[in-house]
Length: 422
Image 1 (cartoon, rainbow, N blue to C red):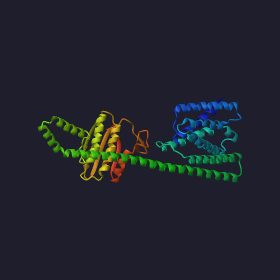
Image 2: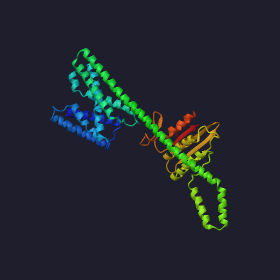
Image 3: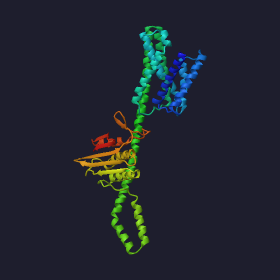
Image 4: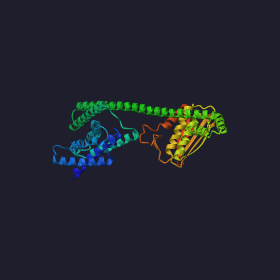
């Protein structure tokens, strides 16, 4: 009974590692949830172990683990064929680690060969070593997406897994049977070559995915900037129309006066209605001395009013700004949009911008209601799709660096604070 439970426990631990590898390395997502998947694995382990007791000549502990793991690809979203194609490399990771531990134990002769074959010590040691390695991978890949592999890359991974498995298996056999030194050297050479090939394949996949990721992030930032440029252009056009309307103010007064003197009530109503309709198209003006910045901040003021957020501002710019209007709009648009997204009704956003000698100082504060997340000292977005979001402050930083400025983001007394020197 003890052996039965130990076997079930060992198989279950191995399957959990396969599950983690699928999730962590390859980004697999459950069809249902983690609890359901674990329950399925427990059930499969018990059923196969019972079958192994009945048909002892057909099943051993390794074949039970291998067969049980075939259930995993059906627990994930996406193409089952893809997850099945990755199963053998996934199976090979803990198996290879366990074999290496066996070789190490055999080499030092710490336990007799007979007891090692039946021992559970090296099996569970393999589990803990694999878990430790997976934890290290988790720390470096915590916020990254799973790797998407092509059919050819999956085939190469399977070939590499077979080569490494055969080589390490031969190494175990050489040590157990105490074969000639020449044979052991040959096997060692095969192992080294197989591992180098495996590492090169994985490194090439990593490089390709890194390039794809950088290209994707660059494209997202480009799309974000293009979207902001369209908004800025629309705001500038609106500001031009508003200034044109102000320029025609005297003409409108004369027209209204003429209609009133003529007693044309209907004409007066119609004319006033047209003026009201035109005025509603324009945002509230915030005088900063810059048409583009006024347009951006006016739009932000409207958004704050809609959400019930108090927007307190004091904005003055340099007479000759280092950054052009477009770059200033990138700065104000991103810090204000982030603040508005983070705030709730009743909150207050404070924005202060003032010139000091030949630099522009910008300070923006807003309350925070969520714990901020940092990765390697860098603030990361809390939104679900991290690839598509979180570029706003990066775009601001790009502008600040261009002019050798300074940017600091911090939390102070429950407020998110952005300090910029441009």
